Image: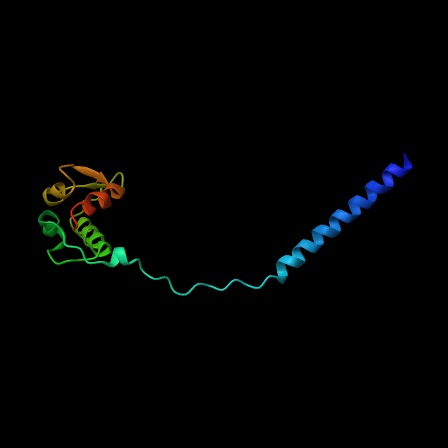
Length: 120
C-alpha cells in the first residue's frame, strides 16, 4: 500500500507544475494588432430614392439608408409620435401611416423593415 501512495504523490506534484507552465506560454504570445479604422458598408452608404409616400416625410432627394432612418426619427421626435407607455412603439400620424402600410402603431424594429420597402 505504501507504494501506491508514492506514485499518486508524484502525479499530484506534476500537475501543479504543468499549470504553472501554461500561463508562462500565454504571456509569451505577441499582442494582437488592432485593426485599422472600420470602413462603412457600401450598401448602407449608397444613395437611394425614396418613394412619393416616404418623400413626404424625409424629402425627395436621394439619401443613404442611414440618413433616411435618421430623418424619420427626427420626424417622430419632432411630432412626439413615440408611445409614452412603451417607448419601443411608434404611433403613426397620417404621413407615417401611409409609410407603415396602414398600421396605426409599429415597433421601432419593424419600422426599418417597412421603410426599406419604400427605397429604390
